[in-house]
Image (tube, rainbow, N blue to C red; front, side, top):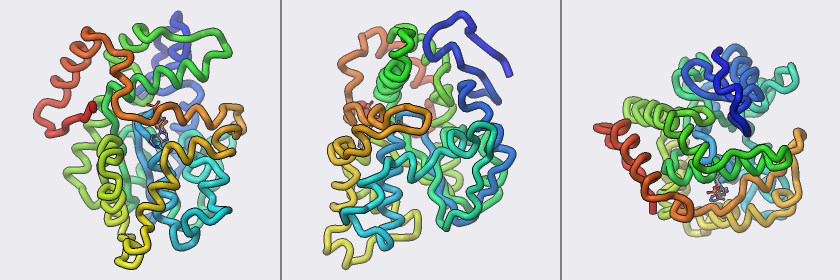
Length: 308
Ligand code: A3P
């Protein structure tokens, strides 16, 4: 492990490089415990994201979709109306290893819905060796960066120890972002999704925003639980999308006032929920600099980000 930037301030203070990606001291033990101890099942479904790519949204869609028979949409006690999506679909490395205790997931009923930010090459061996399905959600780097900047500073506000947008952008361009470099994270999963389309589904935040029905049906088909004609006629797809919409989730009592046991409020996961907020922050120089990096890194990959 290499400790870097010890004199920096804000979230950067606790950043470490492990197996070629950046994580924080807070999550490092969880990442290692998860690599060493997590036993994947063939029936597991794992959502993977680079932080701030829309994990909360996809967790809710995934939960509603997979459990739609057991929990019909919008019944008053539907778990998504009373619980935060991160509790229903936990991050392996943030939840599996808590205060020195490894939580036993083995008794959870199948399919287990789980999530991770860990890059492809560092996933637990059992994920590679099993038929576990992976869903990767990607978001354009400009919005992802802006979302991360707000998130990091929001969580650190009470320490009066925040990073300016310039400081954090400079680090992002150097590849220093949680679970980054961002481009390595996205590219590895993109390539794997092409090589192994039955194991990895690659989704984009912007495509779900623009054509939610098509993308939700794509997800259902990939998970081998497609919508029936009856479900389509009874508007189940629309109902799931409505229940998981930004407006609905953000305004729920649980997400307005609820907190993790560690004290972080759930509301930090709901900010604007739009494509293109980067326009309110990015200078021409920032656009040029990031475009240059993205063009170089993604050249020949066939992957194109959507910025509007
Ligand atoms: P913004 O900060 O741009 O608003 P993650 O869940 O991976 O931490 O990502 C958080 C981002 O997803 C935030 O983006 C947040 O507002 C957005 N988000 C959360 N719930 C959403 C929803 N239901 N629909 C669309 N975007 C959502």
